[in-house]
Image (tube, rainbow, N blue to C red; front, side):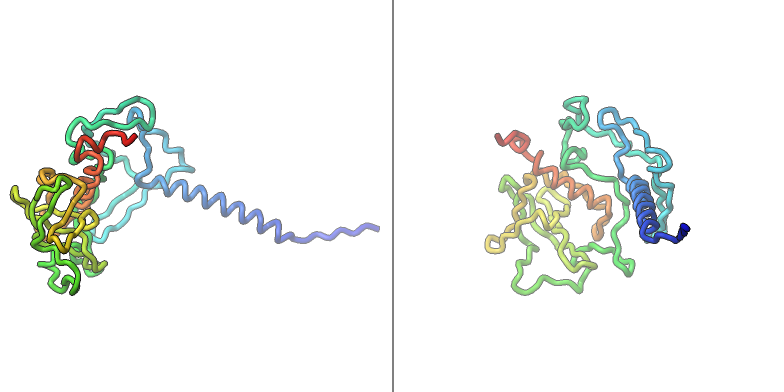
Length: 254
């Protein structure tokens, strides 16, 4: 006599459930990572490549922003800027050679994204990055160098101007920028990460750009706040200087 017993193998079911979950997770992540910023253009000709179909393209989602606006991504908005540069080859990944002023044209290390033209804000809704003349509850710690009044020297050791004020991050409690009053007139922001403060010599050394190139640093529309877009442009300008500030920096080391 033969008897058969039928039961549920929970171990096998668990394996199948895990595989199904893992495949679903991969599909979800592949869809979401193409929501914004994913390179969907061919490097050589700028044509929009296939999105990959329903399984690999996220459905549009609308985000409500802190300032009351909304943004929907993915969308068909394209970066229409004309970049002053020419490709050295048609093959993908070929470098581009600047044809204008790379520090302001958004080429190479000077490239920037067109971020929102609104300032970052604290949890209370106040502008996050402001000069100390506005953030009056901030001060330079005793014993630390106060850069206000110090001369600002470029990579050529020429004087570009003097530090007028210090811009602080009211949410992170740290210094973000130095405001430089230029000898040629006007003021510009200098990222604190690109400034070497020489306390004993009472000057600030900037090795990213020359003194003359401070005149073209992107300006802020407001004297007391900076937008996401302006920050992107300012940081890109100094970043580009490490390659394009002088002709010798673009030459090979070997």
